[in-house]
Amino acid sequence: MIVLDRIDAFLRRSKRYGYCADSVPAITDIFAGADESLFRRILNNESHVLHQLLPEKTNCTYNLRSRQHNRQLTRKSTHINDSLFFIRML
Image (cartoon, rainbow, N blue to C red; front, side):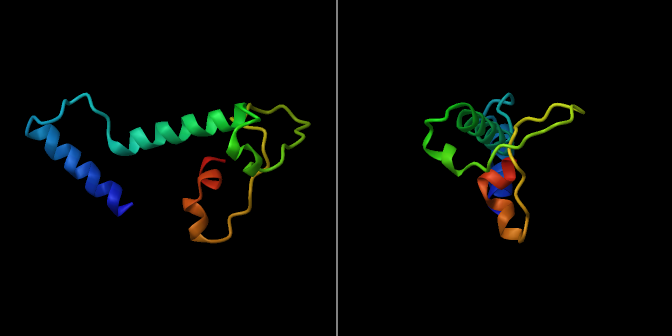
């Protein structure tokens, strides 16, 4: 996260000095949008290379509220798991 903070600081300075338009979103927003887009493509395309890495589907018998996916949640065991793409997106 230190690298992202430094990139965001650079982007803010660029906006302040007029090198970058004010409409450019923060780098964390850009990365979050790219992650979400990739995750949606992996979920919806069974022939995607990364689709086989997804956890198994769950059988949900109740209908409380809709979820973004129908996959089993993985157990979080260490702080290193926070940086893994599928655990972060699930």
